[in-house]
Length: 352
Ligand SMILES: *Cc1c(COP(=O)(O)O)cnc(C)c1O
Image 1 (cartoon, rainbow, N blue to C red):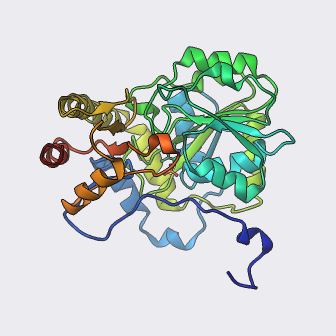
Image 2 (image 1 turned 90 degrees about the vertical axis):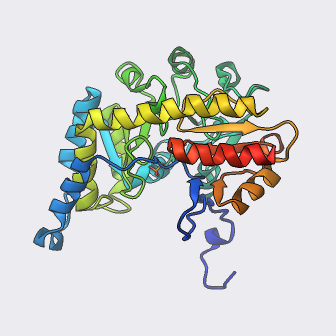
C-alpha cells in the first residue's frame, strides 16, 4: 500500500498466473502450454522480421494477419479483432461490450481472469453454479443480465458444451452480448464462429497460445459482427495503437496459414489425452470428460493440494486451485508429450 496509488489500485485483486519456474528439467504441466514447438514456418517468419525495419512501428491494424484469420474462418476482416494475447482481447471486450447496468453472468467455476476484469472495470457480476457434474446448464442463464461469458470447453474443467446449446443460449438471450472464449476449442470442440453471421450479439475469442504452440508470442483474436469489432477497436485505440509487434503479426499469420501443422500437433495432444485418461482411471482417479489440452482429475483417497505438493517434490508441476471448495480435491494437468505423461503416471503410481 502506498499513498501514491490511485484509489482503484487499492481495491484490485489481480489474476495469479500459473508459475513459470526458472529451473530446468521440470515436467511442466501447469499452464496448458503446447508440448510441441510452433511450426518451422513461424520461426522463419519471425526471423525474417529481425531486420532494420524494426525501427518502424508495426501495422497498427494488423491488416495482413486479420485477413489471414478472416480467410481461415470464412469471415471478412472487419469481423476480426486481434490483440496481445486473448487476455487483452477479453479485457477490451469487458470494457467495450460487457459494462452495463445489469450484472454479467459467468459460471462459478471458470476462467479466474473474468472476476479480475470485473474488478478493474467496475462491472457487476453474478456467478452461476455449474451442475454437480460440472456442466454449464443453459437454462440457468435465463435471467436479466448485462452480458454472458464462459470458456468452451470450460476451464479448468475441460468440459465441452454442445454447439446446439450455445445456439439455444443465443436464441434466448438476444439483448446482451454473449462471449464464448474458445481458448481450447481446437482440441476437440465445435466452434461457435459459424453462428456469428446469424447472432449479432455473439463474440467468439481465440488464442494462438495453446493449439498453435505460441504462448510466448502473445496473439489472440475475436470474431463477431462488425459493430462488435468496432467497439473493441475504439477501446484498443484509446489504450494502445500497436498491441502486436512485427514478430507477433508475422509469426501468427504464418501459423494460421500452416493449418496442417497445428492440426497435427493438436491430434498428437488429443491422442496422448486419451491414453492419459485411461491410465489415470486405472489408478483410481475420477477424470472429467475433457475436450481441452488438459484434464481435471481427483483421487477419492488423496487430497488435491497434497498430491500437487508430492508431485512437485518429484519435479512435476501441475495446477491446483484451493477455491471454490468443490474443486479443491482436483488437479488440473496439462497434456504433455507421451514421455512427460509417462513420468507423471510413474509418480502417481508411487503416490496413490
Ligand atoms: C489461456 C487462456 C486464455 C488466454 O490466453 P492468451 O491468449 O495466452 O492470453 C483465455 N481464456 C482461457 C479460458 C484460457 O485458458
